[in-house]
Amino acid sequence: MILLAIIIQAILTLPLDSLCHAFQNNHYATIRHHHYNYCNPSLNNVVTTCCSALQSSTDPLQDLEILDIEEGSGEVAKFDSIVTIKYTGRFFQTGKQFDESMISFKLGNGKVLEGCDKGIREMRVGGKRILKIPSELGFGEAGFSGLDYSIPSNTDLEYTVQLTSVASGPMAEAAANMGIGLDPNTVYLK
Image 1: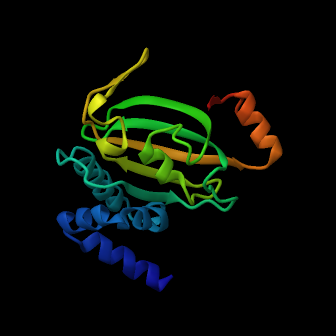
Image 2: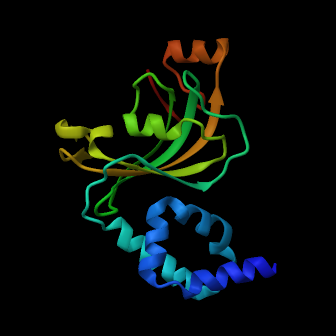
């Protein structure tokens, strides 16, 4: 308990730019996961301010960034597994939401954006991640135009994904071959 108090005090006394730097270097998930809900209310304002500053960044992403915000304890998502995820898609630069759904797909078979496919691998069921996807691992130069939304060319994206199930074996393969998802409320991408 004393160690937790020391860590909280250190976080509260960091200048905002240092805290944001820690967030940008993938320490955000650790701070939020372990301390956010247990801290002095003033940390809530620092976290909110810093997150807003990071989300409105105009610098394009160079690489896929993966932030675990909740560790799962279930089965691990591996290549060729059929996974079911709940997700929310946002534009990285503005934070504006463009999509939210639940889907099932076979991991590693090019059924979703490359950044999502790579970002979901090695997750455990019950886990939740933020995937910051550079345009070349998203819709790229072509962009996307659908019925409900469109993505301009060369747009970086941010997805919050929660892994709800992982399946493999004959029954999962049969479901995949028939084009049905693992959950009646999901869309299966075949």
